[in-house]
Length: 358
Image 1: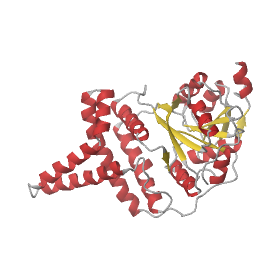
Image 2: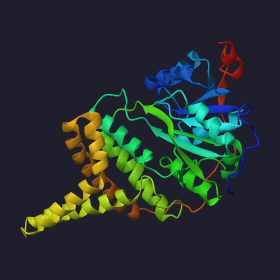
Image 3: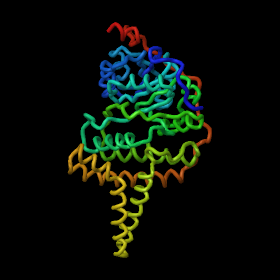
Image 4: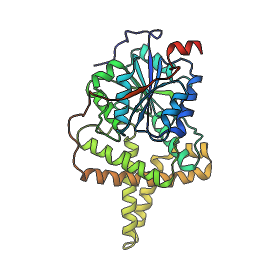
C-alpha cells in the first residue's frame, strides 16, 4: 500500500516511546533524562526489561516511566513486540536504551505522520560522548551512511525509528526468532506490503555504546554480516541501498582482491601492483567518509580510519562467505501473538497528563 495522508492530525497523535533494554542500567538514565528536553511530549514512555539482572528496571522506575518486565531474555524483537502490545499510542517510536534522543525526535515523528508517512527512521549524530577512537569512528560511519542515503528506503532502523500502530499491526511485528538484523527484515516485510519508509536525516540520536577492537569485529561479523547474508540468501531481504550499497559492495570485493594479491606477491612479486590498485579502489570509494573522519576526529584519526575500514570490509567479506555456507532461514516470518509480561506499578507514571503538569 502506498502512504496516504494520515487521518489523525498532529494535535491528535499520541506517540508511545518504546525502549527495549537488556542490562542497560549504565546508559538508560542518560537516555531517559534527555526526554525532558523534547520539544513535543510523548504520550507515554515504556521501558521493556528483557530478562534484566542489573537494576535496569529500578533505573526506569526512578524516571516515572512504564516498566514492563519478564524474567528470561528473549531478544530485542520480542521486547519491541511486547512494548507495542502494551502501548496505548497511535504511533510507536522505538529507541535503543543506549541512545540519547535530540530534542526534535518526537516533533519530527508527529510532523512526518501528519504529512501521511507511516514509517520513518533517522540516524546517529556525528558526535558522541562515548570514549575511544573506534567508538567515535563507528558512530561517524553510521551517521555518514544514513545521511547519504536516499529519502526513501526498503529497510528500517529500530535505533530511532517510528511507525503507525496500523503499519506495525499489518506487518505483524518483528520476527521474534531473529536475534540480529530483525529491524532490517522488518523493513523488508514492510516493503513487500508496499509501505514506504522515509529516512528523516534531522531525526537523530547520540549513541553511547563503546567499542574496542574485539567488540567491533564481533558486532560486524556476528550481529551484522553473517545474519544479514543469511537473510538475503533466504529471500527475506534484499541487498538494499543503504548499508549494503554499491560503495560497500565494491569495497568488500576490492579488499578481498587486495588480500589475495598480497598473498600471491609472496610467490610472484608483480602481484603487489594488483594489491596496490585494489587498495586505491577502497580508498577512492570511501574518500568522503575518510575526509569526514579527518575533519571531525583529526588528521591522524582520519588516516587510521582507512585501516579500520579495511578491517570492516574484510570482516564483512568473511561474514558473507560464512553466511553463505549456513542453512537458509525459514521463508516465513515468525511472529508471536501471545506475550507474557509484568508491568510494574509506579507512584507517578509518565503520561501526557503528567507531562502537562510537570
